[in-house]
Image 1 (cartoon, rainbow, N blue to C red):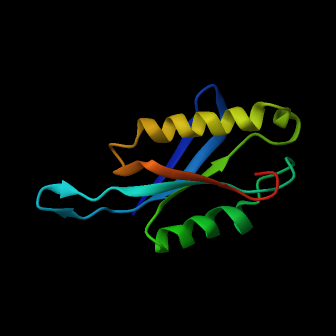
Image 2: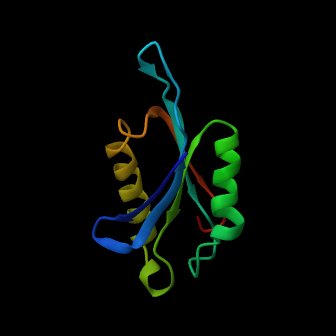
Image 3: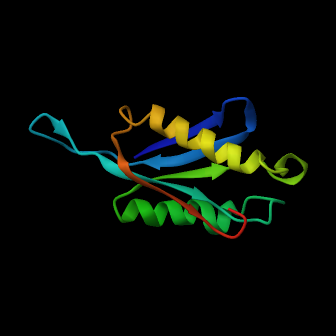
Length: 116
């Protein structure tokens, strides 16, 4: 498993942390897996990573998905549309790394809890 930590462009306070599964290579072809972006809740005051971020990501990994937690802007930095822009940037970053991480981007999903 590969751990990632990436700051989003133009807003280093917004980051991605994730778990990219090792993909088996069979007969010269690597197995692509779907990705899930997880946006934890927290009422735009904080990101409840310890409840809804990494635990969700680890469960998704166990089910065979790459999982990436989006730490979007919160508090005074969370004024509309900042968190939504962070998610859009996160999707672009994940798409840009799809080949490197063996992601199947035809069926990726975005999960959110509460404010996420």
